[in-house]
Length: 160
Image (cartoon, rainbow, N blue to C red; front, side, top):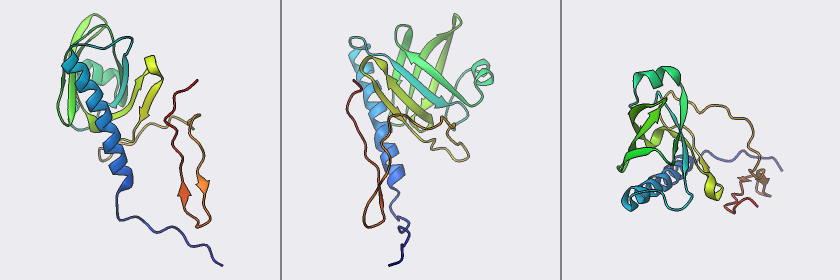
C-alpha cells in the first residue's frame, strides 16, 4: 500500500481560522470600548507588524520598531475606538502621547495575562512574514491518523 500525500485543500481553512480568531480580538476590544474601560484586572499585550498596510503610527515609533511592536493596554490609554477591521488607541511613549491605528490583519499576538489567555496569528499582509518565535511550548504535537492526514489538537483550557 503506497502512502499518498493529502490533497491540497481548495478551502482556505488557515485564513478562515485566522480571521475568526482576529474577530475575538475585535470583540474583546469592542467590549472594553463600550464598557468604558477594562474590567477587573484584565489588561492586554497586543503585538502587530508595524509595516503592514493600514498601520498608522508616529514616525519615531516606526523607526524604533521597523518590524513589530507590542503595546500594553492597561492603565494609561485613551480614545480606544474599534471598527470592523481595525482599532485605534492613544498611548504614551516616554511621556510623549501618540495615536495608533492598527488593522486586525496586522496583529500577530494578543495576550491577557490576567487570565492566561493568548492568541498568536500569522501576518496576513502580502510580503509580511511573522517573526520566528521558535517552537511553542504549549502546543500538542500533530497526531498521525491511519488515513495519513494530520490532526492538530487545540487545548483551550487555562494553564494551571
